[in-house]
Length: 199
Image (cartoon, rainbow, N blue to C red):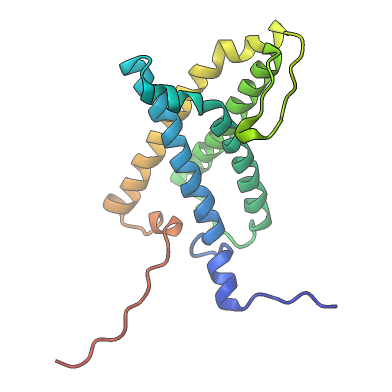
């Protein structure tokens, strides 16, 4: 039995294309951006305000949200691989190569940082059930598993924030200085309004 194919208009919306990213890529991108904003806002507020009811809620969700982000970034990489022949092409220019290296560094940090945190939690011997899903049972404490995250987890997180800031800055440059339309690839397609009548 043949698998029904999406219509060309449906595929254009959901899948990536050489002109822009589809709905799935956009949802993953902006959903992860919102979660990272939550994570970093909580950390900054804790540094500025110390322990308050608000920071307690935000910091208390840090580990579950970080685990969710790890799952989403892996899903995003799988989706990117499946769409690799459809996606907007990488520019073969110095700026294009720099953009590729910047994105590679972002993805690497988005994987390494939560993995280190998960290793630290496992090494702590405490159970871990993000959003009520049992992921780790309580066990013996293993300090050597905790050491890498204790050493560099926070440092790498601030490096990630700096790269994100650079990413946002370059989006603004593309949009308002170079005006090349690249920033619009990750935005929903604008609906065309009905043609205006005479008058």
